[in-house]
Length: 82
Image (cartoon, rainbow, N blue to C red; front, top):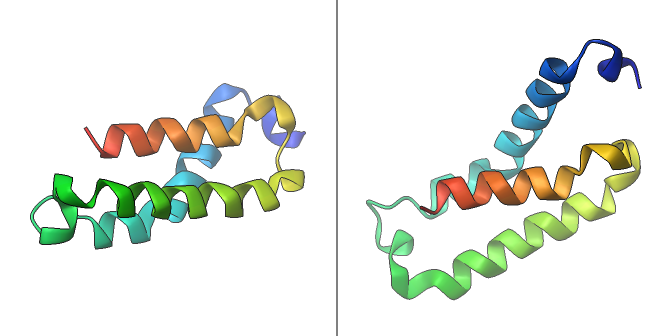
């Protein structure tokens, strides 16, 4: 993959941008300052994330398997929900 020849920094930048785009709507809907961002909506938050992850898995052929895009997105999601 051409991005791999540019080093891990390029790969990380691409994955960071991709995960930011995928999770943008999540951040908008589940802001901690809004009612939807509360702990009582954990089920909705999880369901939303699972839809994002399922959509990513459908597009998995466009990313090298070694990049573990699903794991990257899951880690970003975990950072956002702390």
